Length: 240
Image 1 (tube, rainbow, N blue to C red):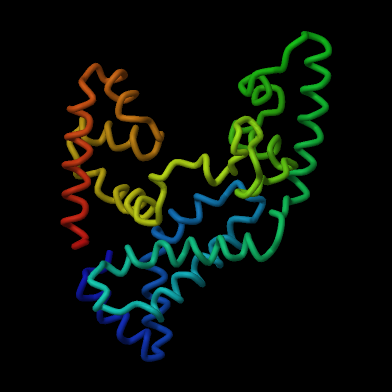
Image 2: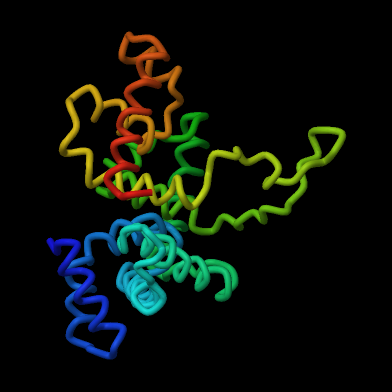
């Protein structure tokens, strides 16, 4: 793992055209690129292609980063990596689905239809997994492969204002929250058992504070205090 000083030195060399310094930055930050890439694995794009896109975004972060931003380079790089991938998905039109996934989708669709006809209900994911010796994640990916993506501007018609999907989204999603979510992963190993439990449930299982409090048998105030403490330490550590 590179120190802040080593990163700064390599960034300066890379921005000056040193390809070796650029390659070294990419190599040492490969886990960061992969952590962003994982967010887009179920989009029908091969992993290697996603990683290359992420690396391109990382290189753009190298070229555009300025120490005066007063933020760690890795924190700055995350939205650049994600942005490159999202730009490709947007400009490339509808998400492409690989042939193997389409093949699995057809097989699973037929199996589910026959099972439903025979038993009057759909099989569980566990049953399908056992029948085809497939991972549940792969089953879900195949079943959703032919689903047409919804536009964020598509209208809901269940209310008088016919609001869009975008209107229905919560306001708490932002690039900052996304960056925090990735960076917190690096800090989890230094947390207490209870802090780790709360953060994982809150940021990776997307549970509300009330849900976490109920599961852990504590008050919502306690959950809020733990979360705020961890986030404060996190922000202090990255100098935001």
